Amino acid sequence: MQLGIFSVGDVTTDPTTGRTPTEHERIKAQVTIAKKADEIGLDVAAVGQHHNPPFVASAPTTTMAWIAAQTENILLSTSTTLITTTDPVRIAEDYGTLQHLTDGRMDLMLGRGNTGPVYPWFGKDIREGVNLAIENYALLHRLWTEEIVDWEGRFRTPLQGFTVTPQPLDGVPPFVWHGSIRTPEIAEQAAYYGDGFFHNHIFWPASHTKQMVDFYRRRFEHYGHGAANQAIVGLGGQFFIRPNSQDAVREFRPYFDNAPVYGHGPSLEDFSTQTPLTVGSPQEFLERTLGFRDYVGDYQRQLFLVDHAGLPLKTVLEQLDLLGEILPDLRAGYAEGRPADVPEAPTHASMVAARDAAVAAGAPEADVVAAAEGHEEASA
Image 1 (tube, rainbow, N blue to C red):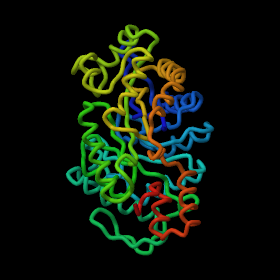
Image 2 (cartoon, rainbow, N blue to C red):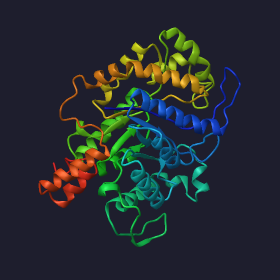
Image 3 (tube, rainbow, N blue to C red):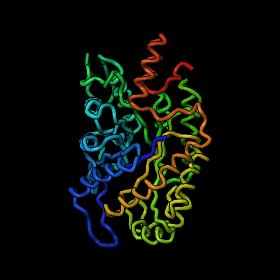
Image 4 (cartoon, rainbow, N blue to C red):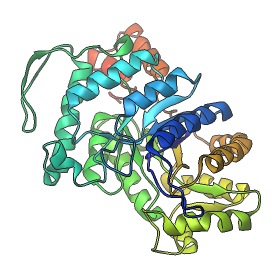
């Protein structure tokens, strides 16, 4: 089970002090937070991609490379790589280079984003958002699995005899997650390729998350990648904890009440009841988080949003220290009762090993490719 954090890189005024961090401070803070996550033993640190204020996450691969150079173990990922408005060739080149620089210590999550104006800024039509996501990933997948690509589609210049450079490290592309809150077509896309599906799991009730994950699992099995319980699932989440639950609620309330994404709406109490947001003691956080399995089954990746809504860096680092204290209990809880046939989240090392095992066993080429992409049950 991979546990980690994700950031959207927002620049938000602290409602308790009236101070707004500078862009420089927020960019540096993302690095500091990721280093703390590595220090306490988390598995993943993910950064977002936005191209508009009040965000500073416009160049995720740059940030990821800088973090990777200053950390030892943590895997770098994205909370969104905009597959709709970023050229698939650039994604293949940028993330392919990052894969080499990090020795495979990275993956990425593709998404459509939640900022409408970004589409015309990059010459795209938001009404084609789903079609862009489908076509662009079809091309990206081919760029990472075929040496020479001929391509013609609706949304970009055709390619003739094109070879992406660099080629994937060890001949194995980065693992891809497809992120969506409410779009079945994206869950279908993840299932079709046997890739991971990540549900944001922040703003919606558990029933909605269950519906999306169940759909992805059924379609994963339909396409022959393995049983439904072997599908690769990730969830988002939010928490704010203090040793005393009353202190957590009192301290977090002004941030919640004024947050750009959910402030001035439902009360903190209502939102905590209706969504997975947990504000309370470490024990309350453990029980709530481990309860996610009750409606999505055993899954592979859990990421938490911790640096948002104007929370100062000092407070975010304190939250991570508290998370680090209960991390062994969280890991033990996820391991308890986990069926042996439920796979772990793919990593570069595991995908290389699966590919080599398939080659040694004399598997057909299609199965070798499937193994290298992290789903060994392709011919099941």
